[in-house]
View 1: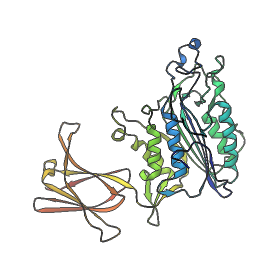
View 2: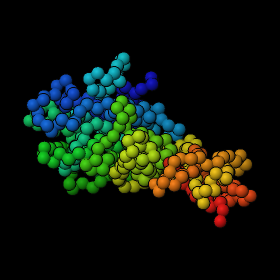
View 3: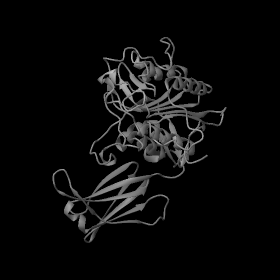
Length: 391
């Protein structure tokens, strides 16, 4: 396989497996900037332009699924089906003999039906649904296929209600279901009317799903991604799966659990990782159940920030981190604190910022003629510690 996944991946697994449907919609021919947009449709769609981040985000996620990180799923990878559209002039898919199909409403429905059938074949399968593109918020969250607004009198004929779809799938199984919706949730109550889901709920049927995780932006919020870059949410999700949402398991290994992804992903999208726009972004991460999703081959990296008390002693203090396990590892010399600018009160901010392998350490701070030591667990994505070095 080449550097990118441009076609469906299917190993025809008969045992329990992960089955993923990955959709990235960036090219919308019937929206502003598209070759078939009708200017007379009115002002409702003027801000819904062409997108360059969703196709790259979907490809990045599909590539990660197929090629894997430093670890593995609790079951095998069974299939990854990919649908992608790019705006006119975007050369992302140029030069590839087998580009993925476009996510028109017809193609989305066909791919969804096949994916849902694969997922239902075994109750221990893991169903994974990923969508990145335009979205709107009405009675539910509406996700827009690439041919949205094809019919001016019924633009939402090329959209589907994600919430109705998710609730219907919970009834049919499998037992573990994961949903990632990297799309805006701007209000469209005045235009949408009834928007159907990709599946239909039975009001009298019990749920087959016992573990569910849904990750998306909060209601009435906007998704964010730099032009021609992978979106912030997708970057954070991949980092979670690669270990930034990992915790130690009972055997001394490291695993990424659904509950810890729900807790960690907003931290990864917070101000320190959000880039130059200065915005702090959060994620709505909901669900039920808590199971290990990904097991790591080695401890993941984690950031450690250490501050000195009193602050004026930082320049005279040297810091070291001594691993507690496995024993007899060399001490990690962190040196002296660095200046990171004033804090919110305008006070000079000096601290140590280091990246370590996750685990337990003895943190040693030597100031003047005394040494202070404290045990501390360093876990992803970020641990903080204050050391009082003088009275």
